Image (cartoon, rainbow, N blue to C red; front, side):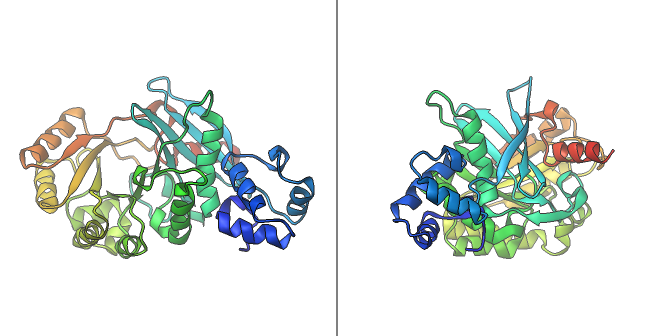
Length: 350
């Protein structure tokens, strides 16, 4: 590997690396464990100083993500993190606490090139992809900050922060392998969800490559005409293409599909849209998650009223569709993707 970030390395890749420094393979396991605990070289107590100094001298570094700001919701205890990367870029994430465990929303890119009409992440375009170690580094950093007195930190992961995960395919696949490694973070693959705006060829490839996170589709409209107005990717992939891709994914993995549907006032929240949506998913092993829209000042789209959301939900239920309304969390700490990063960058430029 050419990467100098050791969090990018699997255990087997670390074994090859330490052998180049004349060290036995068991040193790699020690390194791997320390990296997963969020330690820097100085804190790795059983690593020879000579090895640590040699790696450091050659430009290697264990951690590539640091928490530089934390906001706590007074409403529900949700934590919002601003992370600093080694190159000076910043990304963000959200830790949501539920009865069943703690779910961390992680970013996969700095910025995003999908430019969906309701999202803050795409306002600056795509800056760069995150490496696998930078994605897993978010989990490591939050574990290190929140684990205390035997508590378990992050138990569930959603690839739903800044960026389109399938637009960073190779690094996301490696992240899935690193995060689920029983010798490291040991997060069950069944506890990982991947949210995509619908890169259909990559959805199929993910299943073919043996990965099976819960597939969450950012649909947000029941037809192509409406979807193209709010999601530029819809000009490449039709709604029919998405349905074909998720059927393929389900057949290969057996995992139920989740459709995310942000409720936008006067746009996609009418009863006719609900009827179209019900017809679209008929016969699929799926669940629909209705999302009260987080307001993004630069986008100007309004959230549907509670009355409209629950009327929409009732129309779906009447037609036998599994549906819930997502509980809004972190609204008082700019919980939506990209909002905190935009605010920080804006303040720095003023």
